[in-house]
Length: 618
Image 1 (cartoon, rainbow, N blue to C red):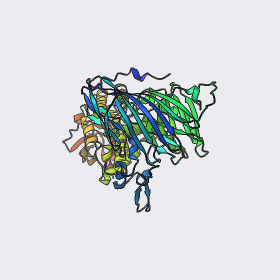
Image 2: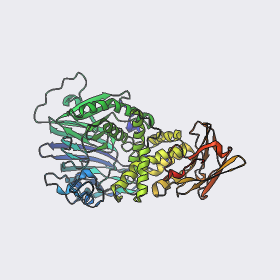
Image 3: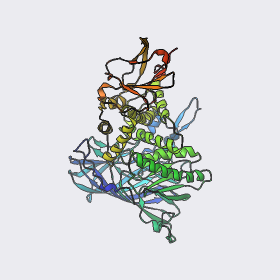
Image 4: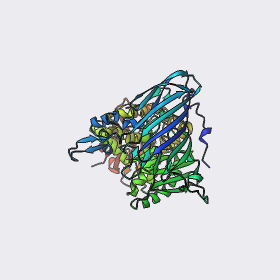
């Protein structure tokens, strides 16, 4: 039993755009894997429905494995970027003076990855296609008219690369097959046009649909990944119904049949030494755990299981119900990476790292697999929102209970601002000058978009915004304007200024206390705006007798006020218009009665210079 049936969710309209449409795909694939050569062959029957108002004269497929070849765009980018991903390079120098060598450039022919279409038909007729790196360009015989469904029949072959990034064989944990980005995948077409991005470094965008996948592989291998195993009582390996006696497998191979509804990706992993544990949760979602029978990691992989159930409950409560029947946490890949209904995570020797990675990757089931933003164009909406909610979840479940659990995100943002290498969040994920700028933008600044939004509209309205965002945009492709409009509807405030400055510019926030003076037993505080980005301003006055008083200066252009976040007396000041560099207010107390005056006592405003935020009488 699942929380809801995703297929009942309407996909033909959006709250902010009644003319919204999205394409639909149905995949039927049969794959044969040779575990000795790491080569595979497959057939794919793809039903593609054009819900757009335009006729399509061509289509594009992603062939991700072609990135893992010497001379590919991914390889050349590795050789030219200042700070390459260290998992993808060899350091021939020292830590202090590194000399990086691309691991892809060193791959032998039997180590590279490749994925090739060997034949392709549209409704039974052969079509012309051309492979351009990681993209297959298909020129159609007949245009696909609006509302029309066509069938593409493809035969393909592939080779699994040596594990370098996300996908691959024989990773450092000894997992045989991490099969991610492994099949010819139809590119996304939406109101912006085709998104046929080459696979250079970043993440993905996909079309929702149903998958029916048969994987034939050596019978000693145990599989897990996207979808629900349809022949569980025949396969066994812990998938069978309780009490079922599984017949002994004859022959050298067995065929696993997985089906998944309303997902935009399909991934799997396989290894002959996997342990498979299964956990049923109160919400009806089955959790699967697949990990190596390694004494150094088994205990932590056992320990993480009830915590994953707690994470599920947290995300269900704070975002919205997980809609699919199962979720699998699998040892494989490199680091941690999210896919439909599963994640692949390396290691497990450090429990804290395993918990943190699981919390983050599981949260991607909401912010990406369920709310399918374009990760190439807006990675901050995926990684940043995931970082925000997983940080909250981990803070609670681990028992840390930090006052500001997002402090690391703010430190990261401060670092990139000070470095002078910050680029706007509107930068395409592949076009950041350095990896550090991408990571801090996507993860840290993207996280702060939400944590700071809570500062602007109030924490209660922020969590209400996430719930409405889930309800309005699940199984759709929301854009930055959609999260902004959702927050506006919930809060009643105007927030275009916030979206513009935080995501489209590198304008910074810097407010300070410019002057404090006393006259007739009353204290006047002069605040100043130093940075270009506008914000409302919280000011807390701490008195010598231990009491506090809160002064709140709303930003005029937001045309609204948040509720009082502090359990102390609040005075709402006149709105502060952005063009005015200073703003004054008066405290009904002498300066000698004041212990300190602090701008933004919560620390949730990303002020780049907090040294001028506090005044203390001498």
